[in-house]
Length: 72
Image 1: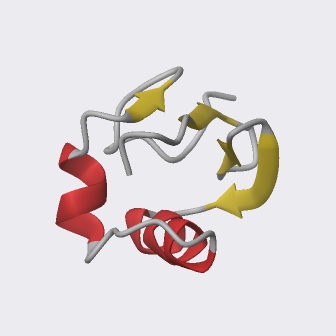
Image 2: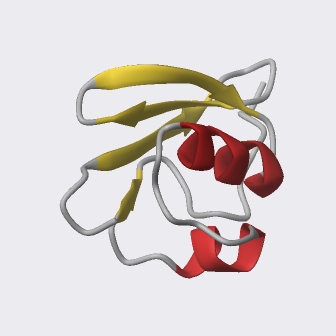
């Protein structure tokens, strides 16, 4: 997975975080599970939520893997 650039953007006010891989938006994730599914569908080797949360190649903007809701 190291050759890919993965960005998880800050949470929106309604919840969820936009996910991009190599500049392509994959969708909005509402949990680590959603993020793992997006990355697996993109062909990246992410076994589960723990792997995703601890991955050094994911850029977390606006909070880490524990933040999924924006502030109102």
